[in-house]
Image 1 (spheres, rainbow, N blue to C red):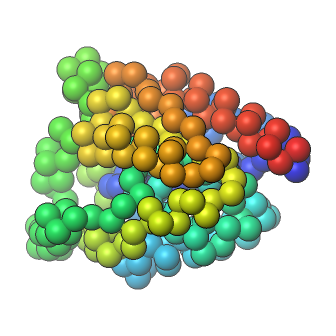
Image 2 (cartoon, rainbow, N blue to C red):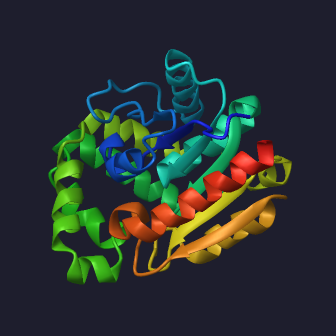
Length: 250
C-alpha cells in the first residue's frame, strides 16, 4: 500500500467537519477527506440510521477516488466508523476510534436521546450548548481554555434541529458493535481524553483489548472532544498510528 494511506475523518455530535481543521492542516501530504455527516455542516438530514450514514461516507470516498482509508471517528464518528467497517471492511485499512464506545446505549441513554430529539424539534437547539458543554469538554478545558469553549459553543449553535434530532435517533438505535471487535483485522487505535466522562477511558481500553491489533492512547488534560482540547498530543498519537498502518500494509 502507498505509504501515504488516505485518511477519512468523521466528526462528533453535535459538531461538524470543521472540528478537524487542525488535523487536515497537519496531514496535508496525504489524501484526506472530512465529510459532514447527514444533517450537519449544511448537509441535508437523511434517514436516522448509522448504517445509512456509513453508506453516505463510502459514497463520499468514491467521489474522492478513495477506495480504502484509515477511518478516524470521534464520538458519533466512531459509531459510524464501526458500522462502516462492519458493512464494508475492504474500505478500511485502519481505525482510530476516539472518545467513543463499542456498546449500545443503555435504557437511560436511549430515553435521554429521545427527549433531546423531541426538544430539538420543539424548541430548536439554542439550549444545546449550555446543556452539553459540561459533558463534552474536560474540566481543564472548561477552566483554562475559554477559546475552545466558545468555539465549540458556536459550532453547536450552527446545527440544524432536524439533523440533530435524526442523529440522536440514529445513535439511539445503533447496534452493539462489541461482538464485532474480534473480527477487525486491521490496526485499531483507541484514543481518549483522560477527563472524558461521556465515554471514559475504560471504554477505550475495552476497544483496544477487544481487537487483535489494538492499542490505546490517553490524551492528558482533555475531555470528550480530545482533538480540540489537546491538539498536539492527539495529533502525535494519530501520526504515530498512521506510520504503523503504513508499515502494517507495506
